[in-house]
Image 1 (cartoon, each protein chain N blue to C red):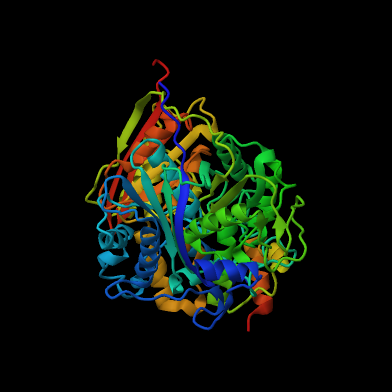
Image 2: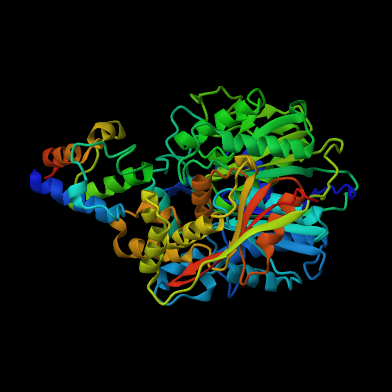
Length: 553
Length: 84
């Protein structure tokens, strides 16, 4: 059973960055001007965005609403319809509100709560889908949107990404010693870290072709390094898999690719890793650009902002210069220039990589349609299920006993966040009867959802920041303030290099399992761990399944 | 020096969450990274914090880090030499 082709077009878009709104951002970038300035508030260079606060809404919510409203106005698409899905990408949402409510949590710090406030503003018929997957969230959101649209779950999707800066975030990156002492210099010999930025962006994805054809999101893929939760891969294999799979899905060959827009954060190891992955994909002779020198690393917004800017570059046939770049020392030579470069080709690749070892890549294509016809024929079976029991014991005692009962001696366990420990023990049980066996690492995926994201770890980090910021935050605590890092730990433990996506929602709607099933049905994975994984203040709920292809059908 | 080594081991166990390990089990001259305690790059950043927090010692540059971070003993020697 093969269903009809589904093509997905990029429609109306809007953004707010350190350089202003869409047209201001574009014209500043064409002039080669950046928006990174020294911030006295954060004690570092940053790209801060001008926010027009809406009454009753936070900075984060106000920024998101402004962009979504612009897309709604331009396109005439109403979110009050069953056919339209809002997809929100963010790493930390309203986290700036946590500083004052560690002991008595406000519901507003929950990602689902702020997403619902934004959705309610637009009278959304469907619940918003929230993706919180560290720095790949924005690029991931397009992969998730493709799945929704291809499977007929909606006709249009608005992908919106946003993150704002506050001490929670700046102190965490500072503890990793990954902040540049000047506006960041992607790929440059002198690069010494990233510069954070604030941004929000929204874009319409639609299955209805526009009159002039336009730019399609032709393919996308997500992968994991299964190597380290904060350090980029030393080989670039994970990012390479994502690029290769996205190109395969899009049906584009190297000749079609006009340029590559990488994450290009300007940390030593990220840019090195990317040069290896791009060379592995044999795209190292293509013009390559990082936009971080103009607007900074805008976290959960980065993938959305930069994808919109990729579409602009593709349409104009010229790519922006990589600001602050002069000469490179990456392991593989790349075609980077501080000046604008000509792009010859109808398609481009946009990538991102992040904490938890995650990578994502999408292909934008404005040429003839050549993507594979979408089919969903493979059957799925539930190979195993596991629910972590509740207990009257304090969590620390309980999980320690459970871990010991497994006969384990993995020292890394004790360093993990509580949510991660709960997941670790659960996954060991889940895989105890029928593991991954002969499944290829690239074909193993982990798809999770919960309601609190990483709030339990967030509170621990915020308390350190509140108590003694002068001494610096703890990197070992901060790294777990991203929910998907728990999935990243499992990826390392069980060598899972396929899709790893973390959704956040108020209650378990089955979204994670639905997406997991679709990965198998559409031949993107052979075995997937999926389900619910939540832990907050001594209360936990882990309900997971192992899904596999059913070879007997 | 003996006392400093003992104290450092206790800080390491506490701050790096080395549960299940006692100070006696850490060989002061054995490599901290790689096998042994299974420490990684995040732990290295935490050790920098320990040096600053408890001893007011800042690492002058990252090139210095490798020999200093070799073992508990090399850390202790660096602290002795640099603390005010």
